[in-house]
Length: 132
Figure 1 (tube, helix red, strand yellow):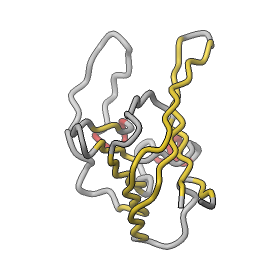
Figure 2: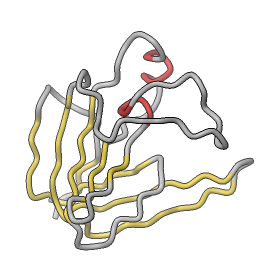
Figure 3: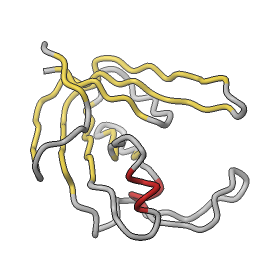
């Protein structure tokens, strides 16, 4: 089965690379209300290159969000997060889209040929499925 994965960040993954996508339940509490309104975004690992892509809340919270001020984040998702769904597979297509907004913004559309899907906690909105 092919999984369609829209990402709210740029992730140029070469076609044919093996990937692992993990959707985490969003934390409640500090910033949780704001996070609840965001669409589900997986933590993405390119298993062939080792490069990881994730949202700030998956890797650590910071009070300072400025494009000119780098923050230190964890290399792996925070241990207190609960995984909701894990998909492993190969990238069949990858398109990085540049949006011309008031500030430059990029998104990615991935098509992943699923090799393994592990449901870890109930039903999920994460990723759309498309018959193969």
